[in-house]
Image 1: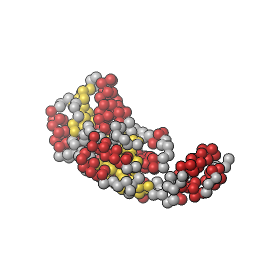
Image 2: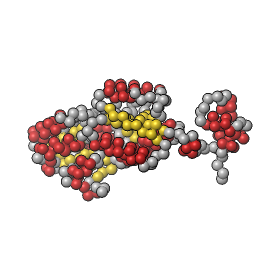
Image 3: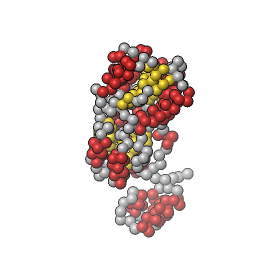
Image 4: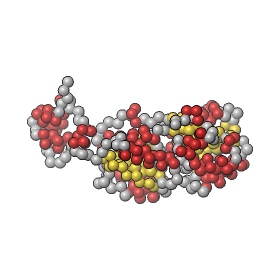
Amino acid sequence: MVKPTVHDIAKEAGVSLATVDRVLNARPGVREKTIAKVQAAVEKIGYVRDTNAANLARQKLYRFAFVLPEGPSQFTDTVKAGLGEVVSSQLVDRVAIKVLTVPSYDPHAVVRSLQTINAARYDGVALMVPETPQIRDAISHLKEEGLAVVTMVSDLPHSTRDYFVGVNSIAAGRTAGLLMGRFLPGGGEVLVVTNSLRSRDSLERRLGFDAVVAEGFPKLSVLPTVESFDDPARLPDVIKDVVKTRPNLVGVYSMGFGNTAVLSALRETGRLSDLTVIMHELTPAVRQALVDNEVAAVITQNVGHLVRSAIRVLRGLCDQQPIYDAQERIRIEIVLRENLPY
């Protein structure tokens, strides 16, 4: 069966090809009555527009800003590398990406950075930032300016963002809780570390972790969360104090992106070989710790899939096309020393 074309629309509606083009691309200069005739013809003949072909013909360039946290984070560096790979290898056609880094734990600085995003220069924004009232307001402003907004890794569900790309953080935390409980049947104390519980991914991971431990592993006692707030000088001292004063400590769960500092501090205590350590994200430092048998398990996600999904979703939003949730669903992966990908 031959697919209907724009020529068929023009014939059915009794208008010129130029008029059909203006209506399909939402250009001005067409009367409401004529627009209605073209839309009725599209519906009647079952025309389905090939958005990719149309954009190629118009040499459409998608311009996206990726707002990522600044500071010493190997995970953020991995995301940047993933973006660079996508662009350089042309895995996604006609996309220009600008990376903006922000001090994520200063909401006012994040807002100032978001305010620099000119809607005349960008089509969409992908965000890795914490959720605060100020940032939610800034996102609302971006939406009012007509930009597509996607959150990555850590969601902002109470904002007006269009879509979230990332794993289910509660499920990821529950996975960590199950692993910790199975690794430590004899019980003991577990230290939990993160950058900040203001990041929804960390908060939800902690909720999921606590729920599983409470349900199935009563011999484990989970200590209050230690937060670094992106202060590299603070975290090692706090970790070393906890390890020194807690002889019953048997496990460490690192929920955030400061894994390099956590590993360094644990090594300095001399007790790393005695502890069961579970971390998130397979960064180079964590990978090496797995190889060296310092980390028991890593809960991670495919960063390449994450980046490509964010770009696909932003393009779909710009083109007002449906988003296929099954395609964009990021899987939780468990990496052990024995199944470490080389």
